Length: 238
Length: 238
DNA sequence: TTTAAAATGTGGTAAATACCACATACTTGT
DNA sequence: ACAAGTATGTGGTATTTACCACATTTTAAA
Image (cartoon, rainbow over all chains, first blue to last red; front, side):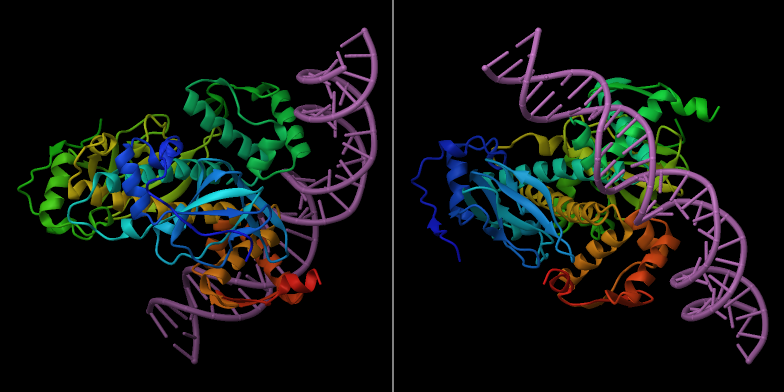
């Protein structure tokens, strides 16, 4: 075990610093205190590189990054380690596993740098109180929003990477952005390398395919500004 | 507009038939009635093939399939239509979009056969009551469970399809199952075609790669029963 | 049991992609 | 303006995969 210490959260401690955390959004100071008390809140410190949670284990706690940052990693059977996401201050992790019963973690959570984590037990949201407290309701409601938001990102990516060809992935992605912005021209939030990583393809192969699509008149782009030919499908299927 | 009719839900109507619906899990008859009343529940019927929701639009309602079934579909810029999922009686759809504000749908929802849908407005969970009712708490709590469960499935698939090679996808998938079952031998819930679809690869290419891996001694399989060589990574990285 | 139907495996080939090396363009700081 | 560093594009090649046709095995039905 590393040098982390268990620190039972003292409710007398100030709650101002938790104001910006999405999980506690919309809570009064009293509701925040109630939450922390009932969630069996514990602070723990970790040194860079140590594991907070391991794949194959289970957890009844979710974690909130108070300082520093953690990475969500996955190691396959060959030992290849992939960083799935990076979570900084205010961010939450393992909430999906903590909300469900006995789900085995498929990923590792590791300290990307020295960090302080607030662990919160989800026991109290698993029982069904006859008269729910306002802090309970708001907590679960906030969790739902966080979960739904993550859901949207995941299903989007799952859809964008579904096609077997680079062209298909690019078109699926650009089509989504087009629907979201309700426009045929838009900026994307990725550079080439990031877009390639997002679509799970090689960067140079992506550049080549983008160039080909531009020559064919399907899309236009310059840096991270893209345009798609409107009604492209109408021309292909007249 | 098709032949669907708006039917304001009458709270006097029996609630027994809603008992098995996950969204209403753990609710008393009174809580169920309260929910239906406050959620502005409306029944609508659709003929096979008609669209319930269209990509590019927004919705403040989630839908519950009371009878029949619907498909979640996606149409790309080239007109290729992909069926993303199939939702039968008791199933819920569009809840992610309905819970978040003004999110544009990236998929179509279409009647797979003649069906009856219960639409529920999510307005009442968006405001923050000072004293939450028990039906409100249970509803949001159930939504959270549904969302978290879906989240787990989505992140799993996203991870399993991340590798660029078929072998990598297969190993990622089998490793997950191995962690979940805490075993080196297990049955998978897919036949070859379904596994290929899940991993976004060609079925015959999958069969070939599986055969190659078996010859190399990495895995064993027979039909849908698979085994992985324990500590495979230790041998590769001694 | 026999037959049909479905699931799975295999071979061959064209197409797509990853990967490498490197050229060009753009950005930033001095 | 210049240089250094980063981002992006291109050419060539080996690898991987999709796709087709078809063999084999397994399951279901008659």
